[in-house]
Length: 357
Image 1 (cartoon, rainbow, N blue to C red):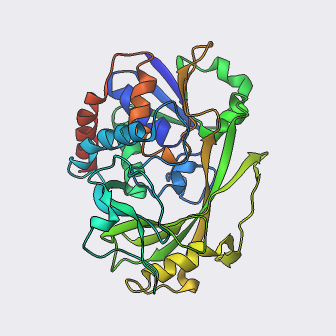
Image 2 (image 1 turned 90 degrees about the horizontal axis):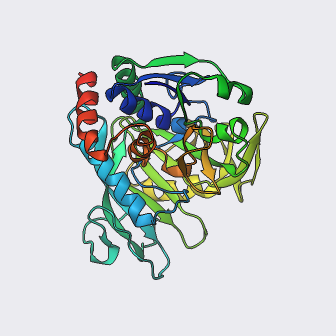
């Protein structure tokens, strides 16, 4: 069956791979494709993802624990397949304040109070609340490149151009909308928001990938910060600024207690708290940091995976869960035209592994 997939990010290419594997004839239609056009295009959410397999900033009819289960179970085959850049790491969710939180149903999750090995913290402080778990982590630059290579190897086509709302009805075959924030314009979805987040990239080829990552809330800040490690760098983040993008311009919240790093205005805690925690492990110099930002395509009406009255199949609105739910969402979307379940993902993972060799 002929299918046109609107989008150039992880939802689009994952959906395209699944459709091609099932024997459909597909084209990805977008003016920008993730990482193929560089990693500094902030409007493409997949360029910004770190990315851990843990759904955040997403509304859904499913519970948080259900979404976690969908994310972890669908990425397990990719972790278990040689040459696919998905690894498992130790993840801390920590707070310096004591409060009662329910520990989510994540891999090996347990209360930090029962954890004996090293726990990251600021100098002179201790993490009094939280949990530690295992999580899958996706090396995005390598992973996205592998997805696009696999898609084209299976027979998929990339068509690089921008489309307008008036063109949607003229697109050939079954149309899948994986345009993320673009759905605000293409499909008049006013529930779309753009959550602006900053990433600080610290060179660390001699250290990365680091053996742990964390999400950390200090007593003097209401919002958390995080650290992830890629193969050649450490990533600091934690800004969360709600806004919208209209005519290419973002309009939204401003950072409190801002500071400038590499031409970006970021919340100071993203640098100061993370640097305090990581200084014992890495040499962090402000003038060697590269800063960037991106936008999570958050949908106030919740993640949308459905066929509409015009028989367009939508798969967007994932917020900060785009990578985490990419394979689960692709399967849900494709079930509208074919019989498929998540059991097929072991075969998809094998195909990725063979492409990587």
